[in-house]
Length: 290
Ligand code: GLU
Image (cartoon, rainbow, N blue to C red; front, side):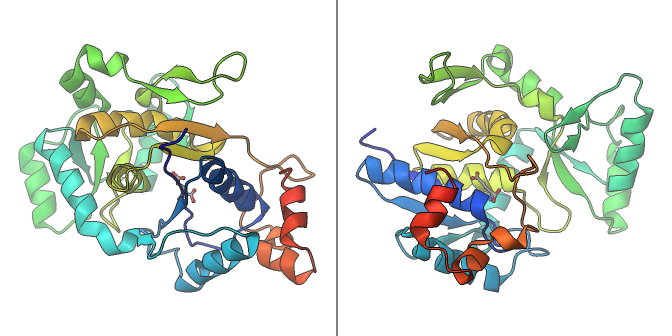
């Protein structure tokens, strides 16, 4: 573990809560145990939800928890052209396609599908259009200025990688039967044709995250179990973009007394609220079970 470089990558869409504290302390703790620092990356591509005051709050809350990170931090909103280039690379290989459908149209299409497609970790899975859009129609819709997203075509990826598609895998710490490090088969197809370039911001969490982990030399991605299936897709993207693959650790998620995951709406458990209620950072660590 001596060459590890890990990161904590929050999105400034609200105040950090106890669940984030657990995640941050797990990543920063792993780095400290290895005698290294942990990067902090601000994942703020979603300009509709991210706010500068929440970013400030992240710095304040993490510093209060005793975390320290190299500065300046990477802020994804300042690097959108880099993600656009990564998307271009995939487009150049014919692995993504323009999707003009609205959320509602996609939902209706999924509902009409002959076999139940099922729910992916991010909601209903979109298996892709029955028929690709003709070049003429695509040109006409672009001419008309219609908004579109870019979706990854699972089928095109499968054709592109051949047997390599079924051989995709990643190293997961703690995945073996006795908690040892093991190899997990990646099944990116379980997510369907995901959006890699959003209509509004032109990129996506998946693309920006994979791009930056590689650019920043991240060797170990330590994040919550909620992103386990995202990793299956990230492994595919790394292969398609020729990027190195980090080792992964998906930690358990903290749940509240009601058995549900903490969410940004649990105001009483934000680090700010806990601090203002007189809790110390050590007490918050203990509350997080650390
Ligand atoms: N920005 C993501 C989130 O806040 C985390 C991304 C990651 O750790 O890969 O959920």
